[in-house]
Image (cartoon, rainbow, N blue to C red; front, side, top):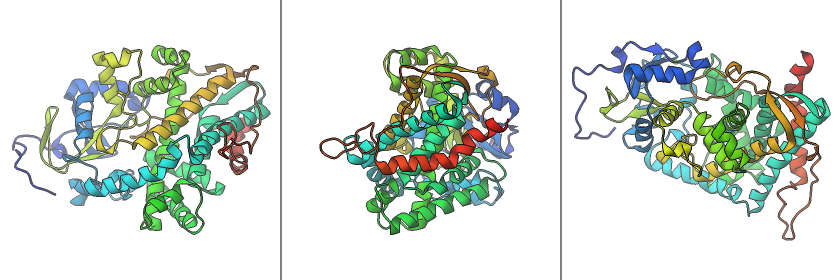
Length: 474
């Protein structure tokens, strides 16, 4: 770690380990995180000491301070080796979040190593980002076709009107289908891998074993695609950096699966919720046909990543009302920062033009790469838009304050999103034809390849019991 001629923390400044801390993850946090953030802000100011699963951390609450941490990568490091508690052996080896942070992957790198790995990812995503390329056309066609397949299955199972869980029966299988297709992942890896990603993010007692299983699955996929390259992200990552070992590539796939499948899926569900619960600004954007703006406003109100990745102080620094010592861990909270921004009454929140003030994609040098942001944004916009194209009526069957949320320190994700629906007669459910292409051989946006449709139906067959089994059993 570099040494700088900066002031050290005063001797009378209390170290994090000496402060009494209240646990962050409580029943109050599960039901009303905004209230918990507000109480912490009133007690401590922009930065608060909290207990996270038995480990003290600095929680950064205010928008200005969160941005400061996210943007200053030379001061606030991502590499877990900067964490003093871990380096001194005082972090329990079975701490639930440790397994995920131990994965040596782009998002936990700094400086030149980070830039090189980020460049590899950006290069590999490039063909899929551009809608004018065959890969871009195909991926966009897949998103539409998979959504149509799910609505066709819903109609076949439940009829033109009834009840469904938009999380379990639409959003999760849709993102799983997209993720496995983009990665070139065999169907049989799908649902088990995603469940393990959820376990890791939620920090349960089996987070460590779940992380190991997901990493092993991604490493097997890397080896498979090295031997049998395809038109998929895994193969393009190998093209962008042939020096990647199977283990290195597996780690990259692992963390990208987290973001593409789980985080993007949460953004879909959270956007649908903000519309259904009657968020006025979100509904106005949707009514105006500004689906991208609808997603932005929903992310501002309810970001899919409530608390962003840890940062570690490279030196002693004053933040909020406290001195943060070199090696201390800080947890920047996007959700708390958004509440702070809206409480200030920023004109960005009330503007009729698009705002990107939300931190759903992060900020600063470690912000989600532009190619990934654009791709995820298109997926979310298509997934949300398709719901309101197919349904003439859709309403929550539970009051918004009674919806069950996953309990964890990272994501803000619904366990279920139950609705009563009616399918639109003006938009009949149909099977999407396959094989139609434009004159130059590029698949049309509404016509995925035959292999895509086959993949979708194969995955749907394996997911059918997960989507409908519990409802029929009850």
